[in-house]
Image (cartoon, rainbow, N blue to C red; front, side, top):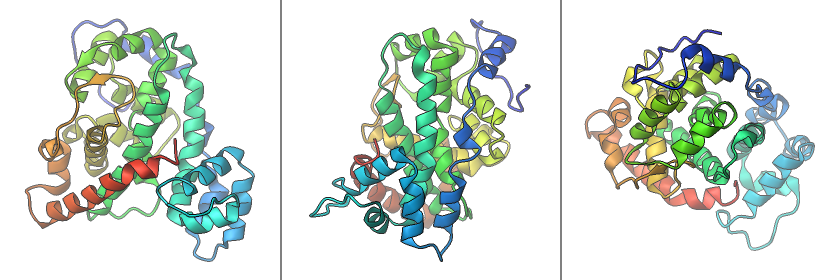
Length: 308
């Protein structure tokens, strides 16, 4: 399958495009990206849905049930008594967080199946934490823009922005280990190293892999260009939001998961290309965005405590 995304130009590499595509085409597909618990999503989008109906569907999924109970009993909610009832948990969490859980749980479970090819143990839990945190912040960032979103595209953009790193574990395990063991200054330097060792960086690998799943163009382009949103031919706001969210999450101490990147300084995201695309000069929109982001950053560690 050919890719609609241009191939990065770099120094001589270990693999040509044909070999890269062959390896990526051999990776297992993710059923969750095509189905993604449609029954539950339809219910939580309906204002007429009863808590009991939502709870009944959640009970059919042991993993989702466990994650839901873990989240509602986390420090984020600070409940005085432990909740062990799914229906009660649905009441406390609310429909928005139920939707986010129903999106994230099957995707992460299936992505975990791709990690078996790496001989050296990697901090997968850190990668899942980073992906979930980026999903939460991407949604918060896009809420402060004029973009109208009536589905979970914003959340999926953040959740999947680093899917290329997971695919590397299956298709290029030795190269991934080398990337993880090499200290670099910035996420951009990670991409340079990936292109040097493999030929494509994780953004291009992730976009190609998602293209096979026929995900929406917004998600595919955001993943492809989240490291350089100014190059996106379309859907720049999604790519820009993912870049800024990724940077903010790194600032909180939740790294990209694998690579050894230097810490992100406070307010350095204001210099990102993505921030300029989203908010432009430091006007009223930027001021509102900074306030919303500050609030989200304070809540983020507690929110994640029940998810990973």
